[in-house]
Amino acid sequence: MHDHPAAEQVEVKYRSLSPLIDDRMRRQWAATESRAYGWGGVQTVSGAIRMSPNTIRKGLAELAARESNPLRRSIRVSANRGRCGMGAETVAHRLG
Image (cartoon, rainbow, N blue to C red; front, side):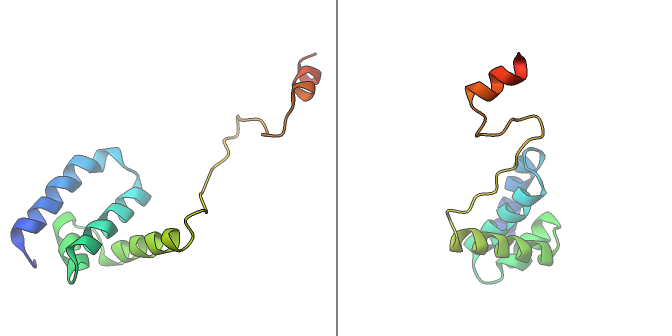
């Protein structure tokens, strides 16, 4: 590893966050840590948290895509939500 104390700090942060985040956030968090570390960051973070360097690079690509188009958000529509355009008349018609 590049710098043992820094790698230990990354590992401690990862252990505390890991149960709270999904795979996409895990990739992007690792990518952010590797970017903050600078040169050799991908290898250091990869070794510290036992994540594939390719996975971290994928996270870096996701962050770059988000930064190049900040207005684009991914909103998933739930199956149990109605359409946004449904007005009171439509709701009344469906209920009555």
